[in-house]
Image (cartoon, rainbow, N blue to C red; front, side, top):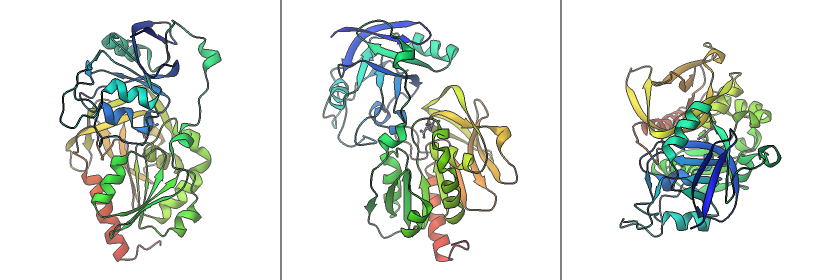
Length: 358
Ligand SMILES: NC(=O)CC[C@H](N)C(=O)O
């Protein structure tokens, strides 16, 4: 295996051996603290454009299976790991982690002091990094931030027949587990491209709308905020992660970037109404700013225990709720699965009573 380097924009260089696809890569270097779930993490479309550092030291030990991918193809820019296991052991394993990276066209670097790298990101904030056989790069010349959502969203609507309520899933880069959770509740689901208009959604006659997770800065979708607002005023709506941020923005709130994001499977959030703490799966850089919330429009439903950031909103008049964390889990705990099942129950009940605005 060839020697390689991860050069940070701030000048630090980390050495290791190159794995996966043989190509140079530029990305935002982030870290995930989950102890398991590397397959779900690399296939989560929200990581598009990012180089993920796995904090857990051994990666690859249970291989890669045929069922846990969260999307058709990984969209991330690279991985950084400590100890790569090339002798996986698990009854479902069909290939090695390094083989998966290679076939998916994802470059990586192993044998890195990931603890030091994570400490560096924690002190510097999220920085860009360059993965290559050689040290360094001209970041200014390399730099361009594509509109990732366009690359990961479906091109055309996809319909899944079922005998329960009909949910339109607006795809900014949805995780398969969101679809699976809806199908498990017997929902019929239409997945639509991120730029689907209110009128088009109306023609699909849904019982509820779910705005998915997705990569990048939610402000990149600014021109769609009026459509998002209209849709959520007309249909019972759930927003997950990017979907949460978009709904908040559509109603006039603001978002900001965290120093190094929340990514992992053990983020504690408090449910305000009950005072109960749930352990959640998270993967985000941006948060809705507290002071930007209009208390006449939204109630804050969840808060992060570690930094008190907003983790959920509920509209005061419309049946609209949003969560910054991932109730569909995968990877991570399913403490908050009730949010998805509750949404389906809610739209089924509203459908029966002829939801007033509709
Ligand atoms: N998982 C997500 O939907 C992430 C949302 C957004 N891209 C962020 O980083 O904050």
